[in-house]
Amino acid sequence: MKEMEIYILPAAAIIIAVLFILLRAKPKSGIAVPEDFDHLKSENEQLKISLAKAEERAENLRTEQEYLKKELNTEREKLSEALRSLESSRAYLQAQQEKIDEQKSEIKNNQEKFNKDFELIASRILEEKSVKFTEHSRANLDLIIKPLRENLKTFEDKVDKVYKAESDERNILRGHINQLIEQSNLMNQETKNLTRALKGDSKKQGNWGELILERVLERSGLVKDQEYRIQASHQSSDGGRFQPDVVIDLPDDKHLIIDAKVSLTAYERLVNCESDEDRNLFTKQHIASIRNHIIELSSKNYSELYKINSPDFVMLFIPIESSFSIAVQHDAELFNFAWEKHVVIVSPSTLLATLRTIASMWKQERQNRNVMEIARLSGEMYDKFIGFMSDMEGIGKNIKQSQDAYDKAINKLSSGRGNLSTTAEKIKKLGARTGKQLDQKFISEDDD
Image (cartoon, rainbow, N blue to C red; front, side, top):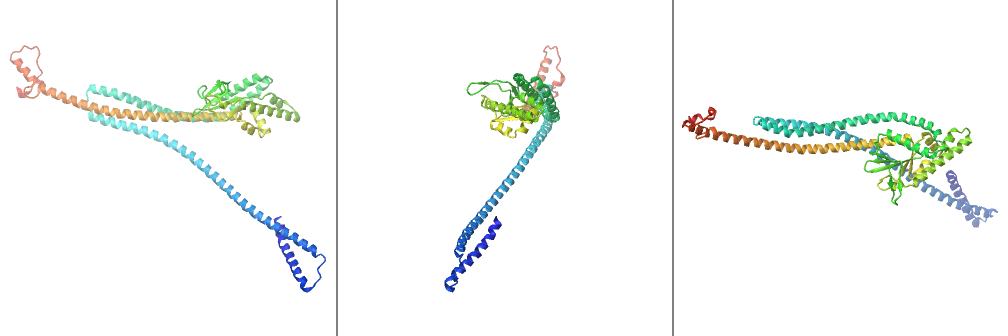
């Protein structure tokens, strides 16, 4: 179309120029006007109109080209920004991991430093005061040091437990991940075995779905009644009572609600049918049953329950893996339909992976709390260490004062002129009756 307009423009210009020359030449030369002059004139007008339209289209195409260039540049900028954001997120995650490693290393270094500083200071104090210590002062010193040693031992044990727990948890998590596929396959097989037994009994189907949900929870690593609750009763804002199948506790006092729904009747017919016509019919019935479960679960408004801080969605658990797969394969809008109703559909494998992630979050939360407890104990130990230093300084002063008092008493007893020992010995020599003899070491030779 653009090439045609390019050819029309010069052709129209040539025709207009010819007509213009003919019109100007007519009155001067007296040449007869062609019979189709009016026709040419009309065509000239049409060509002028076509020329104007072609110029307008060309201008529109230039405008559209500029607009598309701007849109292309905008999309390129968005892509660049997304790439920068992704790179920033990766760098942030790496920095966080490095920060955690640095904190672990710092805690270990602080522990070693505390041990060395304590040993150095204690050794220095003992060396300075060992000459003046009596057996009694040593016993008192043991009473002071013993609680500090116990606190230090407790601190070391806690640090060792934190590192050991972290290592054990990593190994356990790795083992759980390796078992995930096997457990999922086992559950699928067990599901198929129970399908026929549960066919036609809605109550048994519901109980069986809740049982499968509990088994997934048991394999998740979460602790029952601590990190999740089954069939707990809750009250809504209008006073109604609700019992969600499972309420998962998340860190930061948040919750996640899971309800098990079994769509078994149509699914069993689908699995056992032989013709394509029946298969299409039962597939539609199976999908319709799941959509009805979604609508029913959405109407309960679990996120508005009292003391429940839940995201704006509820998890609908389908215990049969193949039932879940067939539904999403034949209804591409099923997930969107559920999401618009504030419902997320999960199967045993996807739910188990989600719950394992939550369990890992709780383990990380406990580790963070342990780190905070270690920091708190470190502060307490440091404060006690300062108190210990103050007590040791006081003991040294008391020992020195006791030694000074002892020296003064000995001086009064046996040293210097007129001491008590010499006076007592003189009294004895003057005739005082005594049954014991004063030890000569207490008698000053200067007074003999």
